[in-house]
Amino acid sequence: MFLVILLADKKYYSGNKVCSYGCPWIFSLGNRSIGKTFDWTRKCINRFLKSNGRNKFLLVRRYDEDLKKSVPTFFDAVRFKYPDHSFDVHGNGKSGTRLYIDGEFAGMSMSLKAAKKYKSVPLIDFTTILHDEFLSEDGIYLNDEVGSALGLYMSVARGNGEVIRTDVQYVHLANTVSMNNPYFRELHIREHLIPGKEYTVDPDRAWVVEITNNKEIAQEINNTPFGKMLAKTKYGDYAMKSAFYLDDNTFIQKPSGNSEYLCTMIWKDEKFGVYDYTDEGLLYITTKVDPTCKQIFSLTTADHKPNYMLLYRNKYNPVYEIVRFAYDNALLRFETMECKFMFLDFMEFTV
Image 1 (cartoon, rainbow, N blue to C red):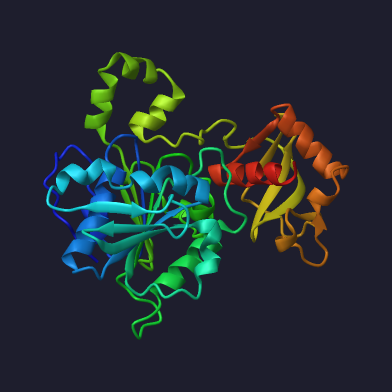
Image 2: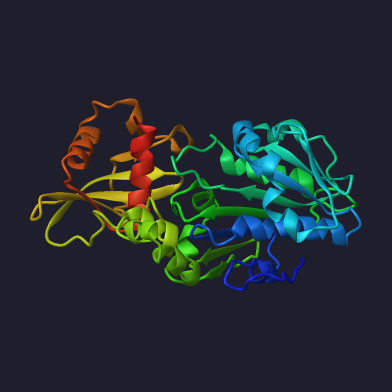
């Protein structure tokens, strides 16, 4: 792994510490305008320059349309830091666009959607994969987004006599949009995150998550007329306090009173219990499951097994009708955020 000492204003973001954990997958999230993209752009450039052209970088976005908007101007914000170097982009930004530093091939763009097309392309000189804005504010991801990212990493990291080159970093940058995203779900990151903790490291040291709340930059924004208006909104918590924009604790509470077990729901290999709390007149989705219950509903074909029922296939199923009625009429509660994430995914899946 590498560390680069940047001669920059210390109030802005630096990825030096997150690099020091030595994890191949890095997730760096934080409030807006703190300099995440600026710092990682410089890291890509500096790593290339210090390696005499061996350490190239791959710029990744979800779709080619995203690349077209970002890649042609990739160098623009940092040019002033390198007065003795030249930077050029050959192409319109879409997958396969090449980036040059001092006339030498230094990097390339690739959409995650098109990554499978590059499986047989040698990428042994690439050591940094930079995926900016990896979290989607509209909640739309590729059908197998994490699988595509894992496959891309394996394609880049193989070679030079190694199955996986340990010097290859996959860097994911984003503002704090939501913990309910495919990366945090499928890599089991969510269950390790602790509110207020800046760094969380995978027990196997495969990934590290950094959540930065830069209060100094936030205060500068807050001191402007626009910032004062922004601070009064939910978006302001996201932009200036690193609050997860799409996550909140609405409808999360602990159940109480008498209850009747309604059914078990299975979502992505996890089981959830649905209870009817008659005293409160509410349905609860919890992590507590009755193992003797025969009413077991799988929510996707991937979870389907013998003796399970596919709930989403039959929207006139009485259990679905009960749960849907409770949801539509604000009579549904969740024991934990995980239960809420599961159910919101389920509702999107059954639309």
